Image (tube, rainbow, N blue to C red; front, side):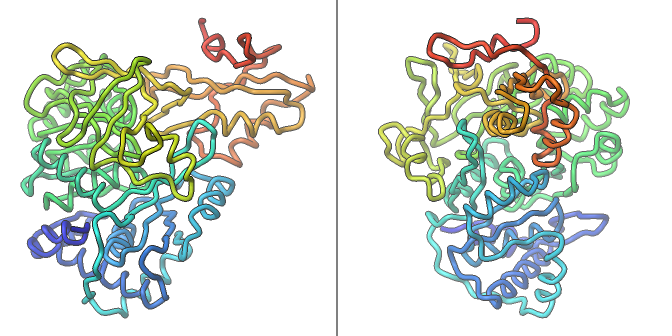
Length: 467
């Protein structure tokens, strides 16, 4: 069964029910279905064929959903690109994915104008569940961005797990403020909406200044967020927080660790215990605190149905199940290295260190690598380190994560200068020109040399402030 057949639970069976609110306009599931059929026919008229890639560089908007559903229906591979990325990062993805079509704000009007002249009917194509549905790019410790191949089956099993375990139904009102270029919003948010048939309001982005007004106006029962959002929501006046909490059924947090203090403060103010879960780009959701049961602070709960988990002697968590991706796009060696024994479908090595309590709750203790997670976005230091070291006047550089209450962590650069006259302000400006904003170091610290062990490996823990 492919995703189109799964989505028909709502697109066909709930055609006349309100599906989506976008910019003060309501759309039924039937309207969403016919809009995406028109876009699919337009893309097919342009010669796109099953298995070809469509790269999309767009902020949250109705048309992004149209394009995604059109890709699903045609068997095209959807490739979302982080809208914070700059030319250097975008170029790498375009070169790697080799898309048949690249859609940005500039190309979108022409596509939608052509789609408006197309038929609302679309024939059904034979498509197996193991066919790729998306390439979601995620960086590795080498700093090289790799495309994780997510299949129709991967997406479907993930959505079925979450709608079942979190009891998401057509009675829910779902507020989605996460970016659809991220697997959190795409793999969890969009798919849970379409499988459950709930009513969703899509926001272009999370605005903490207007978040309370939006929550009070829409009166959601379901909200997916990252820890940064929940930190911001702690600023909500107590009366408003209680009003929001009265109508809410479930707050979910992911993409970065949720501080226990934030969970406790949020429970005190909103009257809800945030449900924390654990997932990855390559696997989507792996473990979750229970919907009915203790949501333990600092824990990510239990493996979801069908997902097996084990911890090796070094503490590394590995897993297998129908949620695990089909490998990295055109990266056979990287794919083999990701699985124990090099066998796809076997145990996937997450790179996360974890422990299991006697009563079965899992707790994460960090990455084996030096991954930094800032506001829900992954930052792999080597990419920035190599860039900095290549600049005139810089001998070497190291990026480490520093704790931050709002974003969880922020990157800090430690640089060794070749030229004492090197201007750090100019270096920071160059970084802002070349990289996404969340990757830019919060500070640049000049040091005489990087601390190394006997094997020459940089000891980053010695660079952390206060160590």
